[in-house]
Structure formats: C-alpha cells, structure tokens
Image 1: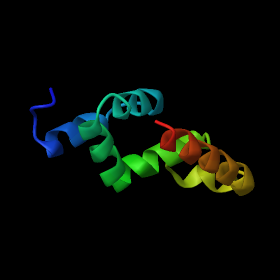
Image 2: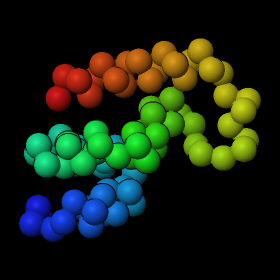
Image 3: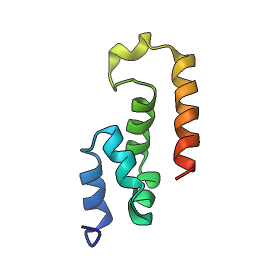
Image 4: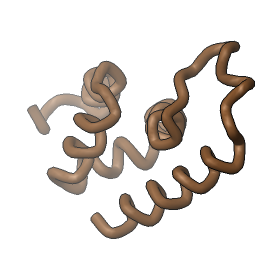
Length: 80
C-alpha cells in the first residue's frame, strides 16, 4: 500500500473515521507526513477531537470545551 502515490493515499485516508485515522498515521513516517500535510485531515481530526461534526448545526457547541479537547489531542499526537 505504501507504494501508492501520496494523493491516492490521501484519498484513502479521507474516508477513515477519527480513530482509524489516528491509528493509521501512527504506523509509519509516510502516512504521518501525509496526515500532517493535509489541512482537510487536520480539520477532520480537530473536529472529531472535540466531538463536533462539520456542518451548520455545530454553532451551539461549547467553544471552550472544544479548544480544551483540541489542545489535549494536539499534545497526544505530538507524543507519537
């Protein structure tokens, strides 16, 4: 699988749920580099880390709680 082009791997990663995405990017440097280099994957991970979904109904979400969870998530991924 790692012999695939980065854009193909990115397309595959974009279909994973949050937990699978985090697990996958922790498996090797190439997948981690793709994860870190993709704003769409980062956005998806940050939303999931604070329990949010992309869409108009998320305006009611507690911003402070989201920021706190994102900070915790950022710290957790730095440890990988």
